[in-house]
Amino acid sequence: MVTRCICHDVTFAELRALADATGEDLEGLSRRTGCCTGCATCRPYVLLMLRTRQTVFPVLTPAQIQRLARDDSDPASHR
Image 1: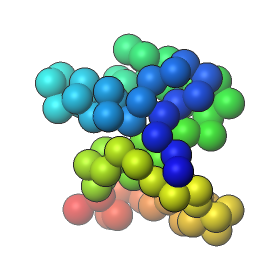
Image 2 (image 1 turned 90 degrees about the vertical axis):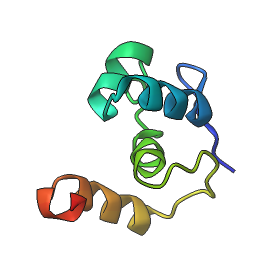
Image 3 (image 1 turned 60 degrees about the vertical axis):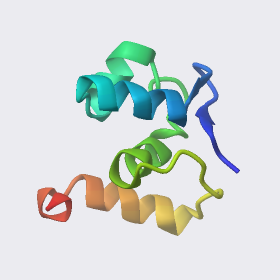
Image 4 (image 1 turned 180 degrees about the vertical axis):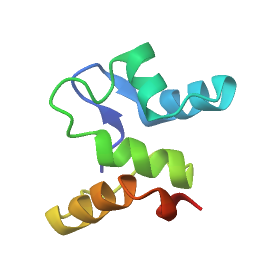
């Protein structure tokens, strides 16, 4: 299971609490905590956390990660 940004040792539960308290999006969370700025492996998981509020995820397949990246770049997918 994937539960955190490994590079900066911040859990998705901590990130969710911060997002809830501040309204931060992915970029704001990255600025505050460094998440997604090391190896960036956590980026698709942080996006999922922001969308679903879940904080524990199975390992995503490359196809799932690609789909999330594509959805993240399409503003229509956030409606």
